[in-house]
Length: 266
Length: 296
Image 1 (cartoon, each protein chain N blue to C red):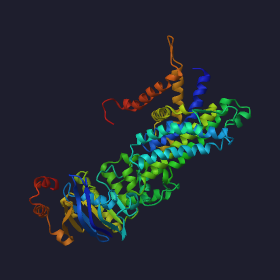
Image 2: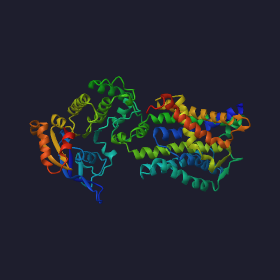
Image 3: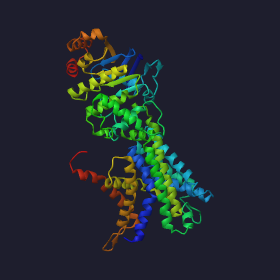
C-alpha cells in the first residue's frame, strides 16, 4: 500500500547548519493497516508525513503508493490518493464557505474541476445522510458557513471530508492535538468509526503516547529521523506509557533533553 | 448637485462597473491585491481603439481587448504563483511593464476615435441621446457579465477559486492546483478590467495611457462601499452589492467635486486624494461599527 524506501531529507543542506530531519528511513504499511507514528518535537515525524503527502520532496529515496512511485508527484496530484486531516482545525475547511460547499469540494478530490455545478442537489441529500449517521448534529446545518463551527466540529467535518471519496491512504497529522481532551476523545472515536466503516489504510502521527497505545494496529517510534521502535498489535497491547518512555529514554541516552521530552510526551 | 452631474455619476458608475467586478475577483475572491488593473484598463482601451481605427468592427474589437487583459493578468499570476514573487509586487511589476506596452500598442500616448464607429453608435442611430445610449450599453454589458460571474462562482471551477482565496492549503489537499486557479483567476479579473477599459475608451472617443491611474483604488472604494452598505455572505449578492458600490462611489466623488466653501472648491485633479480618503474611511468603517480596541 504505502512503501517508504530509504528516504532522507536534509534542511539547510550544504551549510554548517545542515540537519537531517529524516535519514535513510524505510517503512511499509500494509493495506488496511492503522499505523501510529510517535515521536517528540523535532523527531522528524512531520517531515515524514510531509514526504508522504507531497508537501516536501525527499532528497533521497522513494515513496510508493498503491504500487506507484509518487516521490515527485506534486501535492495536488497526490491528493487523488490521500485524504488528510491537519493539526490545526482551521486548516481543513474553508471558513467562508458553507458546510455543504466544503463537502462538495471534498467530494471532487482528485477530479478535474469543470464548469459543471459545484454542488448538486443529489449531493446535498447524500451529505445529509452521511452526516446524519454520524450523529454530529451537522446534517441540519448544511447551509451554515464552516467558520461558525467549533474547533471540534470543524475537525469532525474535515474527517468526513477526507473520507468522503474513499482515500487510498488516510493521513492524520496530530489531528486531535489542538483540541481539549473530551473533544479529542470524540474525534478519535469518529476516526475509528470512519476507518472501520471503509477499511481505510491509516497513517496517524501523534505525540500522545496513550493515544498511540490505544489506537491502531501498529506503533512506530521515531527519534532523530530514524525508526527506533516498531511494534505490532500484540506487542503494543502489553505496553504501558511508562514502558514506552523507558524505551524512549534508553534509545536516546547521552543525547540530552530527556527531561524536556518527558514533559512533551507525558 | 446638478442633474447633469448626477447623470454623469451614473454613467461612470456603469462604465467602471465591469472594472469593479474584475477587481472583486482578485481582491475578495482570491485575496490577491492586484495593481495590474492600473495597466490593464488602458490596455483594453488601447487594443480596442487601435483595432477600430484600423477598421475592425467595434464589437469584435472587444474580444482582443478582453484577451489582452487576460494575458496581462496571467503574467501577474505566473510571477506570483509560479515564480513566488510577492503578489502585490508581482502586480506592480506587470503594471509598470504595461505602461510601455500600452504606448507600443497605440504607437503613442493616446489614440483618438473621433469619427470612428463605436459600440454605442447603433443606439444613437435610433435617436437616443448619447448619454442614454451609453448607459444602456454599459448596463447591458454589466447584466450579462455579472450573471455569468454569478454562474461561474457556483461551478466546480468557481468554488475551487473561492477556496483558493480562503484556504489554499486545504484546497491543495483536495487536489486543486492553486497555481492554475490563481493564474486563471487573475487573468479573468484583468480581462474584465480591460473590457471595461475598452468600453470606456469607446465612450470617451479616445484611449489614453494615463487613464488607468487610480483604477485599483477606485475599484477597492467601490467594493468596500458596496459591501459595507449591502453586507451579504452570498457571493451572488456580493456581486450585485459591488456594482451598486460602483455607482455610489461615483456619486460621492461627484458630490465632493461640487463642494464650494468660501471660494474654495475641489477640482477634478483632487479626485485621487478624495478617493484615497474615501477608501480609508470605508475600510475602517466596519471596524468602527464593532468598536475600537476590539481585535478582529
